Image (tube, rainbow, N blue to C red):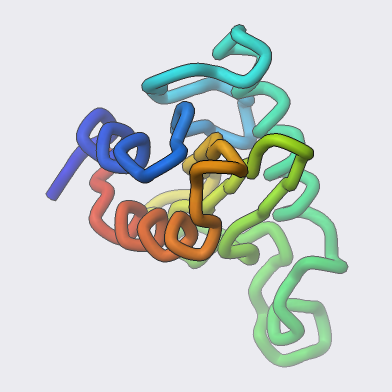
Amino acid sequence: MPGIDESLLEAVRLPGARGAALVDWISGLSLGAVGEAPGEDPDTAAAEVAEVARISAEHRVFAPADALPGAGGGQEAAGGAGQEPPVEDVIVTTASAYHVLRFVPTAFDSSVCLHLWLDRAEGNLAMARIRLAEVVDRLVLG
C-alpha cells in the first residue's frame, strides 16, 4: 500500500498534471507535494486549497441529504472520526487549468485532501477524477 510520496508521484504522472499535494484542510498545511505549485509558493497554495476544501466540507449545502440533522443519518455535516468525508471531490476550473481536490477517507478525522493541478489543454478531467479516486483508495496515512 503506497504512502504519501508514492501516491503523489502516481497522481503527478497523469497526462497534463503540473503538480500534486496532500493537504490537511483543517490546518492548511501540506503533508507532501510534487511538481509545480500554483502561484509558485507551495505553502500558500496549500493554505488556499485548504480554504476551498474546508468551505466545501463544512457547509450544509454540500452535505449529503442523509447527513443533515433530522434526516436520520446522525452524521455531522463536516464528517466525524473514521467516517467518509461529506464531499468526494471539488473541481475548480480556470481558463488554463483544472484544480481537483479529492477528499481522503481515513480511520481518524477525515481532514485530508489530495490536490491535483491539471493543465486544461493536456489533461483529461474525467480520467483524472477516476485515477485520483484509485490513488486515494490505496493511500496509507500513518
